[in-house]
Image 1 (cartoon, rainbow, N blue to C red):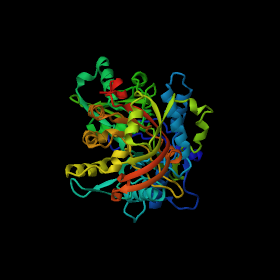
Image 2 (spheres, rainbow, N blue to C red):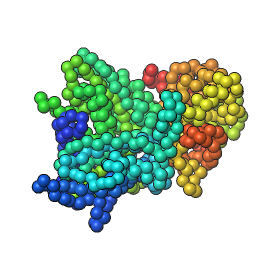
Image 3 (cartoon, rainbow, N blue to C red):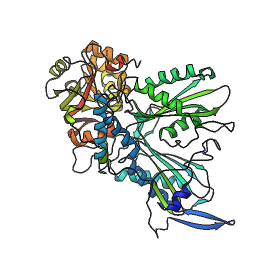
Image 4 (cartoon, helix red, strand yellow):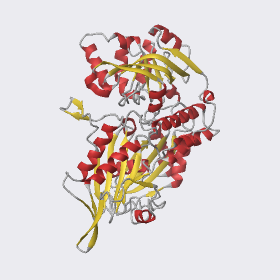
Length: 559
């Protein structure tokens, strides 16, 4: 980016945001950018109107910026996020499991940076927030700004090995995959002068599901009540959204919608440049002391980076907003290990996108990988199910496992199909009884690869099926991410079942290093939610719930 462009960029989001004028007065934008267009491309220009210069933007500039943004954020991370993972490895207070997860996530980032396998199999809902200055004009025709940005999303997901996750409702209870990853969530606001500023986010379902609004009463707004309230709600986040998290807590807001929008922006570190004190003007501010307090609490919850330890959160943002005197909305949300966002901007100098880290290898330490995470128990999945269960029964919760052999992949829609069979008086298929079931949905398989990115999905969404399936002889060994409900623990105790936790986040590494074969067994019309049979080798997992009623997460008092 030119020196003039850096100076012109100004605040990241100061002034009106479409949500409340002057609420977000941000400091100057420190973001490093790279230019996408070349001189002579003609994607931006200048015209005169009513005595003022007008920045003119071709629809192709918007399409190009959107396409490249969603390509980049599914393969590259910000250097600050990568440094935080390295810091876990360098921290003597980090638990062995913290270090094991952090190292796996760094390896995953290096594989993803090759541009073939996305960092997470859930390549997300495409979200675009644009802030268009009053002296910016998009040339027509072409359907307008939203159409051009949406075309960029379509092109990115079609050209890369990204997963189509969006479902179109045909009726209240019937849905079909759009097979384009559209519609995108595109929000455009009027703000500023002669610049068009963007935030691009690929938001996975597991992370989005851990966004909460609590309509508290003003009585909570005291130091001795607010901190315990936040701590209690933090525990409910669990590990399903792939920690370590970037945690955002927002106190106040002129509406519930404004509070949750602020949570989303804060989790992306979009509001880092806010003032650190309030005023009678009613602007938002960051409470740095409360950020330190909440971050310290996260270290002592014991949850750690998924399987116990210190690093439940990389960092915390606490933002205070103005509010109506009778209301106190409190919002909590996270950005997960697939921390996918990038800023963009269009100015008279050209089209610019945030420069993400393309060489994550520089954050990898030289260490003995075999010493991470403690002892490992190898589990042969080619053995009959009773023998697999007997082997697992010999090991306590928290035991680290290495799985080799066949597994069945099924998640939400497939579970609903199998439940229909049972309720129609049919038995479960033999494969669902003979093999562990892995809750996952793969991204597209690149040419020459056995698998696309293929990490675990949130286990809790399948909790309501477990008792019924285990009673019918299926789902006796389950593999996914996150904590389970008490009904799952009770079912495992009653039927001799197990829930194994997989590391949430390293989908590219699992595809490259652990998954040797993928074949569709049933329901191909469900797309990524079809039932698959996969062959795995040295697939990492932990015993979370055993056949005796023990639950690792229950020991941490997560409810």
